Length: 425
Image (cartoon, rainbow, N blue to C red; front, side, top):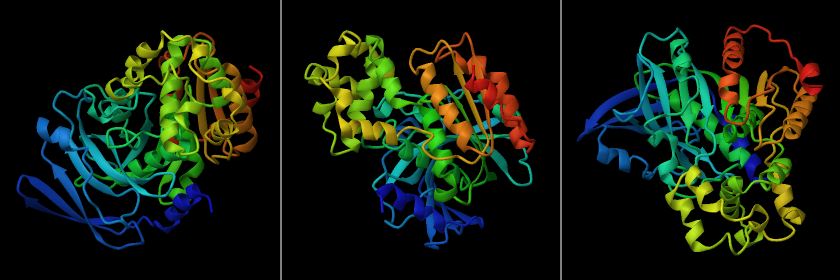
């Protein structure tokens, strides 16, 4: 069995039957002893640490504690209020989370993220969730969104005002120790789904298992993979639909497009470094030229976020960034295809938005993905194509359309597919 299938099959053992929590004080820390009955194996008490906020605690929050080796994925381990300077919507409260997920080799990993919850009485079933996946931010721990003063969730105010809790993963090893498996779709998808499971265990709040996946750019790829594996990996989550804007699709075509502009070198370097650590049969020397592998340049991946990495690498001509014959590397090509969204059906309603002026992901990649999705997804695909938006401005251009789509999905109204129009656009 493939290592990814082992991780997905483990999710079949989950059952949503609620939890019972008891809080005790230990020093300055509140420990919530939670009988997590949602997981059918093992039935055990899991200590959820509630860390009082302080600047010192904020730094140590991400240090993973020792947990039992059989702790199920999606288990909440630790929470802490977001820093006082974090910009939150009115009448909401925010927590950073530490929770368990799986790596692609089926080992347990600790992942950080955050949740923003409305400060009012929840509906009878608990707050439905917008499960957000962020775009490329870099690989250094300081780049984890849960550390930011600005959470950078599009439409965040609208979500909380319309009765949603927002749950977001940082992705594994971004914030927590290790190297983030950047653009490794299955890992990102598991991180998203486990964040939603973990959020249901935040003591004192009612978060439902109703989940809408939402991602942009890298996060679009993550959301699409989450939609493909959700039924098998987290069958107790009710994933209602998936919305993506400028998703990272068609990775071979996208890589070819990136190599036209040296200003986009940083995106490829981030991918190369992450994959050389994730896939042991893919050494960094097979992905980056000797010039690009200089210690001085590679150091930016540990000290800078994505804009800084791009600034460091933009002086290298794009064609000098990689060794000759990169796209003849069969191992690399196979992994690019493996991490392409759309290789299996989501079987849930889908919203896809992109702009015709996008220079990062070519329109042909979007069109190819939509064509596959329209022919394989029986639940229907609705697309929004802006003739004037680029990769960054699609979020603003598509705002009213995606908000309306989310409202319709939440109300369980049928949404007609516009596949015929979008394929021929």
